[in-house]
Amino acid sequence: MSLRQWLTTGKLKTTAPTVPGLPDPGDCTEPREAAAFQAANDAVETIVTSTTDSLLSTPRKRKRGEYNNLDEEQRAKIGRLAVEDGVARATRRFMTNSSIKVSESTVRSIRDRYLRARKASGDSHLAALPRSPRGNTLMLGSLDSEVQNWIRQVRLNGGVINLRIVMAGAEAIVTKFDRKKLARFGGHIEITKHLARSIMRRMGFVKRKGTKAVKTLPSDFDDIKCKFVKKVNNVVSEYSVPDSLIINWDQTGCQLVPGGEWTMEEKGSKQVTVAGIDDKRQITLLLGITKSGTLLPPQLIYAGKTERCLPQSVEFPSDWDITFTETHWSNESSMLRYVDKVIVPYVNEIREELPLDRINQKAIAIFDIFAAHRTNSLIEKLKSHNIQPLYVPGACTDKLQPLDVAVNYDYKEKLKAEFHEWYSTQVFESLDRDGPGSANIDLKTSTLKPLHANWVINTHYNMSKRPELIKSGFQKVGL
Image (cartoon, rainbow, N blue to C red; front, top):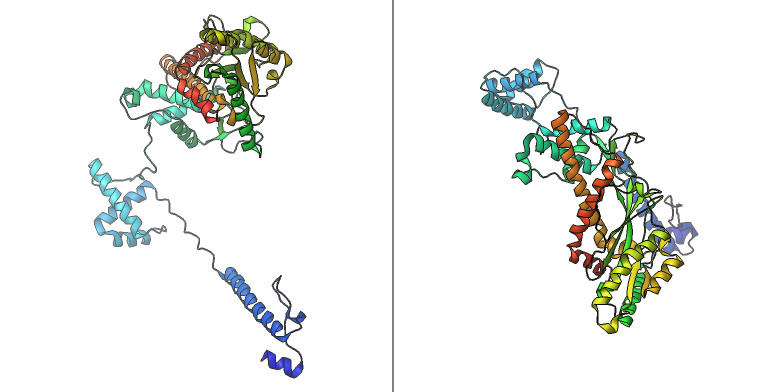
């Protein structure tokens, strides 16, 4: 018909497209092309229109009806009627005498609950029927509320609230009142982070974390890793460096009260106001490891200006380096001290065990680009003892530094476990001394500093017995 119209009149009736992007048949010079464009446009416009109409005409999902909150007396009445008259008749009778609408399925479930409750109580005429408890049974049972009350008291006292604190407190309370439930006494309860999170969540608390810049790897990380591994391997190959003389060291902050950046605060709160939440008290722990699986003596750096800042009455191992700086962070002088007191004595000891022709055997020290590591005095001191410094590429330490990928995390977790055990004991003794609800735990620096020092001693000893973990750090980074 369109072609006939074109032949008789020289014109083809077309319409401009209403859908954006479709071609206008009116711009065509050939009748066949104009007819094809018009037919295609009509089909597309039909689909778009019908789809839009269907979306607009689709009825909204029916709103669910409101639930009826039956009280205990009403539930008992429904259950009694259902037992006496049957479900269907009880449903009609209750709805006739009450404005509340209930379905037969609801009445049936209430009847079953009523029969079980009547059998359990021995009372044939129950006046009230409580709802069945919802959710899973609480692992701590009635002690769960005791733990929650204790946590609230800690907050009222201005104390720190974090997972380790909650775990320690929960373990102490269960030990005090029902220790047979704990796994270590043959029971089924093990106090874990998962349980602590559950308690905090049910109390209406959420995790809060300080804002940090997102750490991203360089786009050419694979190339950087290849070059780093190749550089280390070239030095090892050229100077035949044994695994025992390939050393990695790294500083890490170590809090007196563990908990890191995580704490708890009520949902919806705008600001954390509880004292002690942002506990910044910490020392710097400088760890060194070798590719052969040795954990070297550490350097502990305390904050202060004189030796009085060091923990008193603590007997550190003689080969440890215990020092202080004003901010507790490593600086040029503390790094030189570490090399003199830890690295050089260790390297010389290994060299003495080697054959005489290797008395000047080269060693390798791998560390990151922290400012205290880039001083000329440190580099010159290392080279004067025939120790080759090699830097871990910037922004790659979490992937290319052996300590970061295998040792630091386990070390800190063991330290947290030491704190957990001590804190749990303190809570237990507090309950004995002051009764339920007490939460007066001494967390003063003067109290914690010597305790923490002994925790580090215990942790270091235990970690030194794990050479395979230490070796895995070098393996994971490709060395």
